[in-house]
Image 1 (cartoon, rainbow, N blue to C red):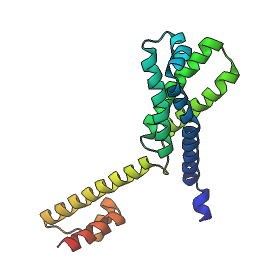
Image 2 (image 1 turned 120 degrees about the horizontal axis):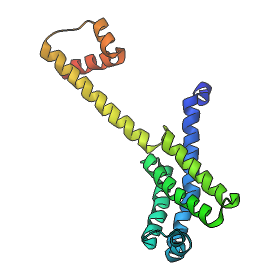
Image 3 (image 1 turned 90 degrees about the vertical axis):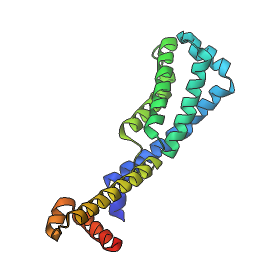
Length: 186
């Protein structure tokens, strides 16, 4: 058990889980603050950048923070959520630089959010996520289809392979599954 906990994969996946959940949890309130007074946010942050449709872009910023945060927390479409946050935070960093120059007190939190979301977007959500569950289900369905195709090919050709040939072509686990499935289907 201790070796499982100390392995790189377990440690990396746990670190990604912590990073995802904490980043999403502390960032989500920023989106709700924007929604609470969208006009004020548009006047203070979007209009000074001379961007078109300030109210619409304010809603986009708010919903990307709220939606992206929930996606990070759940580990569902995680990279998409992280990229939404990276986009919004990039504009916030640009706003801070344009309006206040290089003020580290304004930039430090934005840069931490940017680094967290970028790291998650580049590395993925880790094993402790809904994305990983979906990928594993899809892989198992794909493996089942491959096994069924192998069984059909085997029965159609009428040739029987030796255990050694079968092991060389797909591995012992796949060989055992194919033979067990073919025995139960007859």
